[in-house]
Image (cartoon, rainbow, N blue to C red):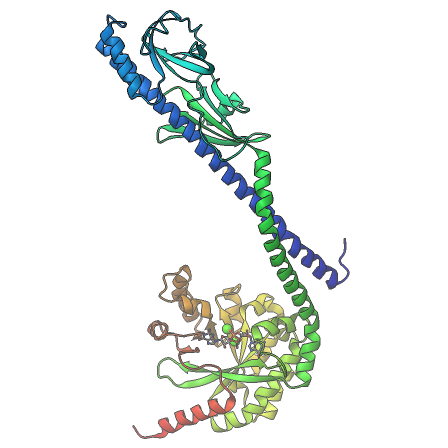
Length: 533
Ligand code: C2E
Ligand code: CA
Ligand code: CA
């Protein structure tokens, strides 16, 4: 598909700007919802396992005490009394019995259970522990019990003891399983023993191994005890997650929509601004809304102002000033940079009349863009400076960024002709472009302007700070003088001075200023120097 107009592009960007934040917010809501749901499931699974472990602890301790106390006579009155005491002291155990095969021989509950057949064992764990999972007792026919038997003693507990966990989530499935055989011992809701597969490979921490998974319809958490052969499972229906997502989407979508609308508004505004820009710049040129500020270049060795860079400013009749960082790239893109450079040259030419009459050794830096360097007419344009301003080419320093020099064969022609006429040449923003030492050597520049980003990095420990000495070294090897740009602190100035950088420009010394301020300062400098020491 070919996009015919920038308007289509702007529209598509605007639609994307609305849709993307919303889709993103729903995606994030689901992700966050899933995480929250898994956290909840894991909390319940842990609680089930904790109850199961505590029960197993009580049974283990109780049976160990009984076997130790009365190995030979398990149903002696003394031992039965001990059973009673252990039963009473254990919060989870309902009764302790001694078995003879499947029959109760004696119990902590008196004689009532004696002779009762508890039925066959359902499961024998590798540790030898025998489990009956469906036990009914005559005095509580409504309640299902479980027995856990070892060394002939069996503890009777409520079947649902471990899963009797209060959940604030409806439809939560809970289960306790025999870990090895994957047999469900007690469960509430749907449970798939295969979920325990998720534990494979998971690390064991704090006495348990845990895993989380999402099955088709369930968000699942499993935890297996590392002390006993039990595993706990909690599963929450995915439908609940969807509800949660809907709830957070209810909050996030309006926020996304608002963000999207703002973004879309910005995109449309930016698009309009971009397409209106050429006309606006033309109008600004017609209305003379551009003017210059001069920022001094200082000799670091003695503090003298030896030159100044001309920096263009734009103050529209209505509205705020627009910085060159914004309109220069736009002007380059829409083919108006030539007109701007022409305006700069005319403005500099006008100022040069006064400036160089009084300060013939001073120089003014003029920024050229890549388009200017590719245009043969630029050399003729700059000749206006010589005719209008009673100035000589050596009074001007042409600043060309490294990026301008990407096609050195073309840009080189203009620069070489300027050089031949006697203009000084400087590489602007040195270090940020695609520097090739060969063009630096071939084009015979006078100066390198070390970019502000490197000056900023001085003494910060940042990776770029290590580049500064290399840049300085490179300039020295090429026999080029240096101007450090954007010097803001005394520490930066001392560093640069100590490393042999000759000149600097930056707020530490002076901000860009109008011509009359520059002239006043230069006159003061001249008078000071004229005074006998
Ligand atoms: P540049 O040529 O690197 O100019 C230096 C920029 O750094 C200027 O910003 C200047 O005001 C700023 N600067 C100087 N010292 C300091 C300092 O100590 N701290 C900070 N934070 N900034 C400092 P400005 O005037 O906004 O110019 C931005 C860019 O716009 C220039 O970068 C140049 O690329 C372009 N530009 C400015 N005037 C012209 C022009 O007449 N023609 C062309 N083609 N481009 C221009
Ligand atoms: Ca510059
Ligand atoms: Ca620069």
